[in-house]
Image 1 (tube, rainbow, N blue to C red):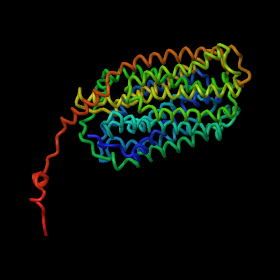
Image 2: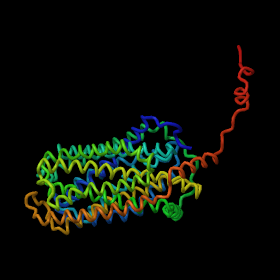
Image 3: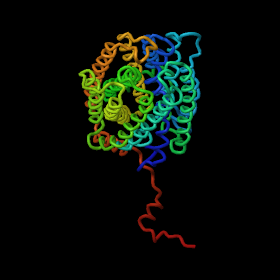
Length: 490
């Protein structure tokens, strides 16, 4: 049975969502600043950074599902998820600080970056997977799950955008400071403190509701059995279809974010003010998502909303670049150019986030489909799979960006005014073609997700019918039948 039956308390929506701030801090850092920091500031070859992150993902591919599996099998009086949320944020904060202040002499090497990236990613999994796995445990309602994810995404974006605002106003306020290491160290310290506050604070605020002894005590653990169960879960048809579509959608998002610093600096020639306004534009798009995603799911369902968001987002992302190439765009760096770009960006990012949140919410329905087939619930395993898809995508997006940057021969530390026009043209074409291909792949698979609202609600009803009913007291039944006959008088 879910922890909450009936309407979700507003306080629960807020405090549960607050835990996603840590994910937003990490995602903003990896997507927007990690490649430029190691490439343009520390002088590491862009291909080396991309290869290091790809190597870290191979390790993630092995360990991440185990984290979800262990979370599912955790058996304490505080439930399956809370112990993870109280312990994991502290070493995460330490490694996040080290990522932006590398404790190595000279230029970081390939394995230095791998070690830091693996540590941060795995510890963030130990926070995010148990936290998001609470969603299908808290409620089994199709729309209420979307509501919880709306608050998670809003909080995650707020965390990431807060870091962007502080980056462009405090830590990295000028294009020159973005090429110096000092601001990145302060960025890492502040982000680490915010991660701990978000994860521990969210867990403590939900403690009274979710701290319950699990219904089933897990059997003895074996590594072979663990991987067998994980493999069986990942063979679920709905999960395979989600993974194919979600991977393309997340790679597109990862590439779009990681290439942002390059295109804003060298294609659109942002001023200092334009960089500072950029987080506000993204925040406006997330607010629009928060308003429209619920009605979209009620009208079209999650699969069609996810597929449509990918196509619409791609169209709005690519149109400014197409107009730029056709010579129909205002002069880059002008107020007209920046304002028009921001208008397209608001629409593009709103649609893209609708696609991502729809795909993520779809995973919750896989839990009941798997339970119907096997009799077991595996929230942590499936969300570890979702988390692995997201991290592969972020790494894949950064790898694509690194390959694009490497192919156009953009030297580290190149000033804005010194980039050749043909270099900018190559950057634009490579971005547009890659983005269009990824969006079409994402839309194709997400539209084919096989679980509808009606199928999910039928599964929930069938599970409720199978659940043992509590035994009623005979005296209570008699009192309900004839209250006056059983009135006790002094």
